[in-house]
Amino acid sequence: MLIDTHAHLDEQAFDVDRDEVIARARGAGVERILTIGITAATSRAAVELAETHEDVFAVVGIQPNYVSQVQPDDWAAVEELAAHPRVVGIGETGLDRYWDYAPIELQQEYFDRHLELSRDIGKPFIVHCREAEADVVAQLQRSHAEGEGPLNGVMHSFCGGADVAAACVEMGLHISFAGMLTYKRNADLRAVASTVPRDRLLVETDSPYLAPVPLRGKRNEPANVMHTAKCLAEQVGVSFEDLARQTSDNARRLFSLP
Ligand SMILES: [Zn+2]
Image: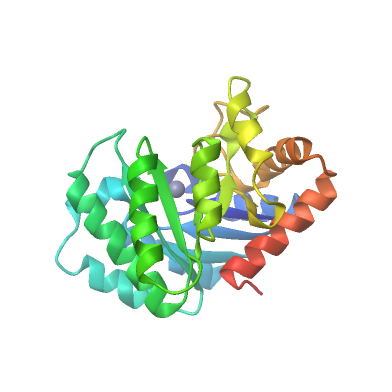
């Protein structure tokens, strides 16, 4: 049994066979899927999917690449959706210096809003970080210093170094690995994965993107999370079954999943 902690099931890529994709995941032992919003509209779509599919849960927020397109009522919509019982997390949020679609100050403002909302309602946050590791860690450390106790969230599709992973673990965060872990050239990332405490590890697909080896280049889907989990099990030095159980326990605990 596995849990895919990050998919975008509302994406157009799934319009032709969304229900089959979800059924295929169940058939492959993926017992839960978290589907993530990146705008107010896609957050609403995520909630609708979670309302209509037993195995699907929603995460709502505005992804950093979309914060410059936010309409006046969008944030209020996210806040309202966040309270929905099928919503188990806030995000994805964070910083993205790779695409650079929005001024970094605006990305930072929305990152803080998501962190505050997460703290206010007691649901964990999901961090997107692309070529902005130092800024993300600094902002998380400020948030950590302001609040009490560990941070309640996850670094999704992690691709930073061991120092970044350690700083995040230190603050209480979980580290989630996606298909990039399986790519031949990413030996460094696999080495980082083996340094993360087992009770902080998660797996995800980030589907429809980033299909793992041996499906690289194809449309990705939640059933494929097993390939990343197998790769992670090898790095950590445990059986696939143990890794699946551990990461599912971690996901259930972090997101308070049934
Ligand atoms: Zn995502």
